[in-house]
Image 1 (cartoon, rainbow, N blue to C red):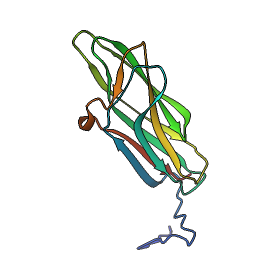
Image 2 (image 1 turned 90 degrees about the vertical axis):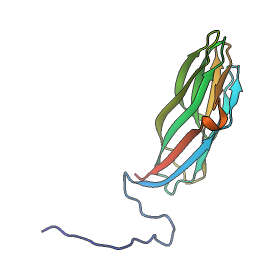
Image 3 (image 1 turned 45 degrees about the vertical axis):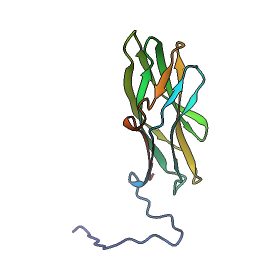
Length: 160
C-alpha cells in the first residue's frame, strides 16, 4: 500500500533557504527596457537590458530567457547585430547574430530571442545583461521604437 502525506502548508527552516526540490523553480526575476540604443561600431555596447538574481542555493542553475526587441539596421546602410549574454560583466554566451540589411527606403526590424542555462555556483547577487555590436559599418539599434519595443530578460532559479 502506498503512503500519502497531506499538508496544508510547508514552512521554511529558520535559515530562510526555503524548500529545495530538484527541477523546481525557486524564484523568478524579470527585467525590462524600452529605451532605444543606437550604435555603429564593432565595440560591444550595453543594450539597457538587465536583471539581478540572488540564488538561494549555490548548486542552483539559472535559466535565462531573453527577448531582445526592436533590433534594426538603419535604411540605406547594411548591418548586422551580434548579441551576447553577460554574467557580472563576463561574456558567458554568444546569444545570436542577427542580419539586418537596409536598402534605400526600408529599415529592417526584428527581435532576437532564446534561452541559456547557466551555473553561476554562488549565492551572491548575480547580474545578467545583454550587449550588442554592429558589424559591416552600419548603424544598428535595439528597442528602436522606445515604448513599442520592450525587451525582456527573465531569470529562473532552478533547484538541483
